[in-house]
Image 1 (cartoon, rainbow, N blue to C red):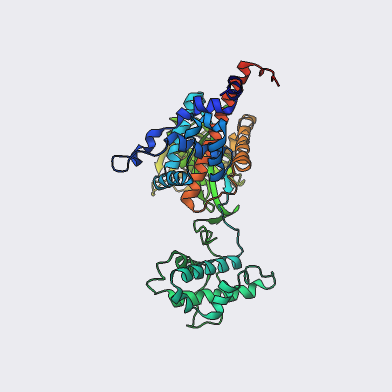
Image 2 (image 1 turned 90 degrees about the vertical axis):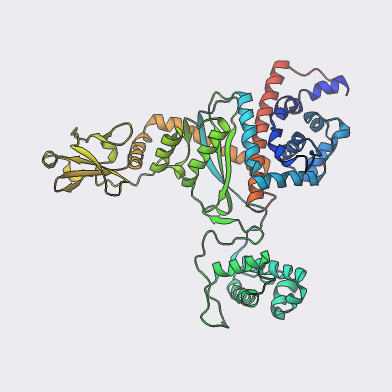
Length: 515
């Protein structure tokens, strides 16, 4: 290459990727796929993984990424290739993705590469933040009528292709509605939809009754979706040949949402999946890196995602963060206690204020550091003893009845009056919630917790620049791999971008162009 052109190339992202990012890819993770029986890989592991990562960095299709590899000098330089070697086929990308899907190596590749990146960039990870964002796989968002029509049509098309003779046994009017007159149901006006939905429900019932016990049809995946739709959306009729099928007015949020992606569920943000993200938020870091990413059902609560995220940050960073900032959706007493005791993490999540104002708040009592014993009540009295409840799930502090009898706050005291004293029942989670409600009102907590909102920019960047909002794939495993690759791509982009900025600042302005 011409020296002047090479000098310009060395000032781009390609030079930093080649020198600093390319070595981060752990090829040993793929050794298990290649042995004496299977032979060696036909392409370098780092080459293929880099193409998959750069594809997500620039939000390209497979064909576009392979074209960049073939003709783009920056890509060839970044991947340490001479032009004659800069070639791969789409089948190679497909095969590697299939390997990673089968072994959940998307998560493994993300964690191992990110761990090396964090170490190489000397990022601090003691303070992190977590949030969720809603995504949609490559499906159409269907109405209820559209769901019935598309599911039946998909089954009848598969039946016609695989078992033409059996397809001919389907009532002619049903075949006409779904095979010969495409869109007859799905594009119905709003006023016509209820009537057409009744007809679709009858057709669904007829197909289930006709093929439910047929050995060849029962094993078809498309028929399994027809049967699932019928069981989730329709109520069993009371007669053998009903004139009308009653519909379930409140189907489960985990019910079928699209025959194209049966793994999609329905949550308060709509149909699709929820992606959990955690990233560093230490102000001294030159850039922030995603440390944990996972894909969950859209109908699952964020409450269940604190522990898995902390476990993943431990694998990626070597230890869980000292502080994890989240929104109120993750905050609960159980999560605060679990994070503190199991991972050494202070979960900085606000707690909703639904405590009764009729009694003194539990935070008015003074507890020991482990929240196992009450030291003093709000009036300064120490309890006589502590004991567990009969279930063993909570503690009770027993106060003197004679002392409490003359207390001016006895009418608003949360203790329970019994024969031998007044009892205060509490758990570690109760104490954690009460103390957090007090803490979150302080200016110090509010100021320190402001940094949590920064992860919204990461969610937006993944969706705007890397196609996270609307994926090109379907089904849970493929969605999971795509999300892990996009998160890894963002980390690599930020790392390479930082290195490029530092190198350009050190080198000074580019030489003047001779032309």
